[in-house]
Length: 143
Image (spheres, rainbow, N blue to C red):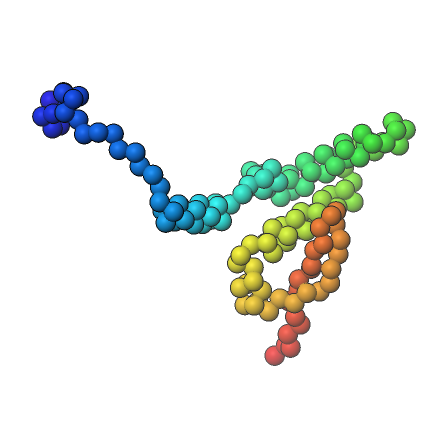
């Protein structure tokens, strides 16, 4: 048998110790949780779709979903049928561009990248509820 000789005799065991977290250790634990929450990327359905499918397939799937949702709101006589149109794919491409730009601008690394690349706001547009800023590279003189 391994362990101390008093292990088989429960009356020789040390008393149970109640461990209470000190305010200092709770503060350290809170900081660690906050750091982990920042470093662990949050994945939503859109990010997973883009990771698992090619861009072309993602655009087509989203275009079909959008068409389905629009058709559900229309009467049968006004529903869109047939293959996807170029406009439907283009609108998904614009939506995905806006989505990825919004994700990138909300990252902590964006401000450093903005300074390094000298990105300047080109203008602002509204999509859905959120106000977004479009960024561009300045025109540099040619050599």
